[in-house]
Image 1 (cartoon, rainbow, N blue to C red):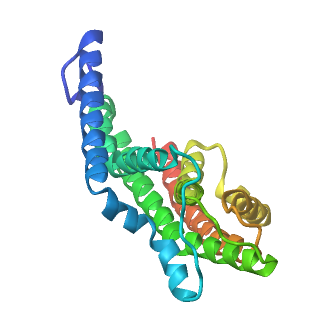
Image 2: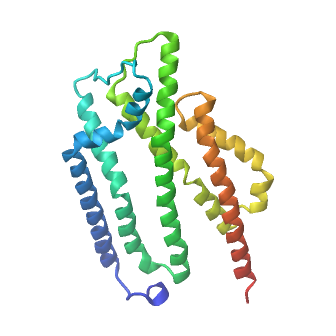
Length: 256
């Protein structure tokens, strides 16, 4: 019998059939979004160029046009946009399908833990990606332009370099914003305590700035601080949430 009494017993091949259905539905949703991006490629490309156009609007005299340097660069950019864009847009649906697959095997208590966790994971990634797209990417482009102008270099950026920067920053920052969930999970599992986190708060600040230095491609302290500040706020929120989780876990363990 399955846990929680929510469904009947199933055999190994029935599980495989359910998994196959989950994978097929996920692949179909991904293919639909990738195809839509391919069909509206020009409009989608204009959206992704917003950070560059925003900085260009601040500098009316700036001459900067992206140009390809290899035969296949434009093709590679299209593949990158369709694949990554399709995956990001399809991710909420894929998580829903995976949740449908694993939910029957979870107890009611586990479901109450997993559902908010999945929702917060998606929300934090969206917040981090938006923060990067609207603030960090323009800041990075602005600093890069100023450095090139200071050194007297001619700007000859390629679409590949621009979209690599965009992908690294947006996905990297979105992933970095997930770390509060990891902290709360470790507290729930009893691996660490909130007292430990408070004791080593200064060390956490150093680690946060190291993460900011790794994720942000420019070495300027302004961009790194701009990224590190919300990470520290998230750390404090994780400590606060971890304290509540820790209290409930201890009460449950003390209960007869």
